[in-house]
Each structure stands twice: as structure tokens, then as C-alpha cells.
Length: 444
Image (cartoon, rainbow, N blue to C red; front, side, top):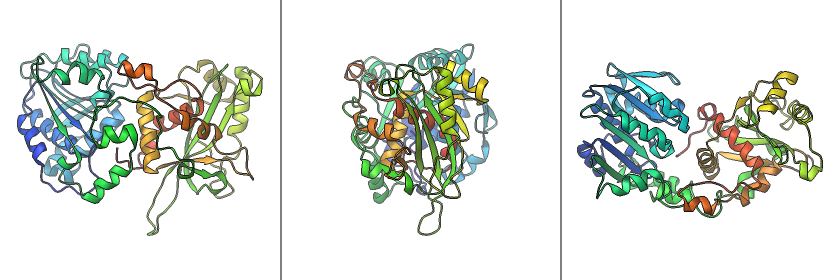
């Protein structure tokens, strides 16, 4: 998660930022700590300085996806309020494989899964910038280190804390003070960013709870335990379906497919709300839910029957009577494992579905940030419309918990029980992130 402040920057670096800027001359330099703590700005400044001297190989910028590279790396680099005249020397189009920085070609790589490490093969890397190291697969990172063979090759990386048993901490950061040669790291807290006002810091502190508060606000490397959405409050996070506001658009519908387990499809919309001053104030809403549970219904459906029922539901009205009542989702997204269901949608109903982004932990923490900040609400059934809204999601959210066995292995994984509507919600939120990020700004 990026730590770039939304407030106007003061143009003055804090003490920890100046220290890390002076000292980051190692082969691998990691800037870690709380969100909005100033680590991204100073790491990007240090990266720009290194671009001028990189030689003997290529320059790469690596993030979970190219969209996140654009949002977390290139948008701030191209912002003159942050980098002054240097911003004019950075050129990048979202999604493109290369950028230009101070006249140098920079390769932009996404590393969303272990297979992504193949893109590094054959490269000789002189300089690397890695956004959010902890969400990069270990295999990819290991391959990157092996590709940094030119003399003087350097890596600059940022991250928020994760589990104390995460590979980055256990295998690398914990060894810096003893046996690991060529690595340096710097820890950042909210007070290390002089651009943040006390009001803004207090706002950030109210937007996270539990695990996320300890990691992203306090900057602690702590293990996941207990409820995943410990901030969940039915009164705070749900809205009667009849009271849904006008929608700007229904971005998409995502299906978590099951045969013996439940199949759930959820629709995500972005509102056309305005604040008291007449300014746009959009929020995200899970507005409606398709659900078939063969155990509850005591009827197991074929793909043909399930697709027919889903499409019948999809063609129905999903919003209260208003000018946006007949809006339809722009995208249909399916569970990546639902190959047969996707074929049925395409062949019989002429619906081309996109495979969901199934990065579970990233999706969970994105949903948690949206819920904690009040940027995501879930429609609940009403007496007048008992078959509308997302009752499955509302029922599953309170019991969604971390798997203690995975925690012992240093992994953040949910217990795979009663999570079908939650998975559908996660799919549609994560897969359409590049769309709703145009409207919704998170502290994360």
C-alpha cells in the first residue's frame, strides 16, 4: 500500500527520510513501516538519483500489477507538487511495459504470482525499484536478486509490515544486523512524515482496526489471528436495499462458483453521491447478490441450469426505482477455477467472463480498508424487498477468520468455511480496482 499523503506536501524531508536518503547505498535497501509515513517519497527520490548512474544492465520497476505500479510509483513521480521539475522527465502510460525516466528506458513488470518470475529470465538488472515487497512472490524476488549481477547494482524497495514469519522478514530483514551483507533497512512511523497534520494522522488512525491498525498504523510485524473483518458492524456497514443512493455505474458482477458448495454472484456499484458543498462524494456498494446453495436448496444444478438461473437474475432490476434502476454491470467476472461455467455463459448466453484476480490476501486487505474507511457499504434485504441485497455476504462477514494453522507457518490465510459470498465480493472489488480507484481514494 502506498504511503503518499493526500495533503499538500511541505517540501521538507523528515529526519528519518534524510537519514535513509544518505545511507541507502547498499545493494538492497528496504524502506518499511506504517502507511503515509514518508517511506515511498524518499525511496522514489533515492531511485531517481540512482537512475542517473545505473549501468551494465536494465532498469526495472516492479509492483504487484502494472496498474499498481502506475498508481504507487509513476503517478507520484509525474506529480510536480512532489518532485518539481523532475516530474517532467518521467513518462509512463498506465499498463505499458516500459517507461522513460530522465531519458532512460525503464521496464515495468507485474509480479502477481509465482509464475511471473519467468519474465525476469534473461535480464541483467542494474537497478530495481520494488513497490510493496511483501506482496511480491518469494520466487520472483529471489530471481530478481540473482539477476542483479552488474557491479554496483542496487534495489530500492518499500513495504508495510506483514507477519513476523513472512519470508522477507524471516529470511532477510532479521539477518541484516548479523549475517546478511549488502542489505540496509529503515523503519518509518507516521511521525516520520512532516507533511502530515495531526488531524490527518488522527483520521488515518480511525480508518483501521485490529491487525490492520497494528501493521499499517503502528508499523508492527504481527501475526494474523481471530476475526478478519473485526471492524464489521451491521449498522455501520450495511444499508437497506430500498435506501440505496443513485449509482454512477454498476462496475461488475463476480461469481464464486460451486457445485457441492454454494455459488454466489455479487454486483458492485459506485454511487453518484455529492456532499453538502455539491462536490462528488462517491462510495462503493455491493448492491445485489445471486446465490444458489445446493445443500440448502437440496438440489444440485448442472452448469446449464446454474447459468440460466444466473442470467435470469442478472437481467432483472438490481437497484430501487430511480433513474439508475435499469443499470447493468459492465463486466462479468468468474472464479478462475470455474472453466465449465464460463464456457456455458459464453456459448449459451453470449456472455464473455473475465477470470477474477484471486490474490486472496491482497483482496482481503483491500476490502478491509474500504470497510474501515466507510468507502464500502453492503445492501441488506428489507421487508418490502426480502429477495434483494446481499444477505449471504452479511451473514458470512462476522465469522470470517484467520486460519491458525497457516499463521504458525507465517502465512495469512482465511479458514475456507462459509466464504462464498465473501469471495464473490472480493473478486469483484479486486478485479475492478483500476476502475473504482478513479473515484475512491483510500488512506492505504
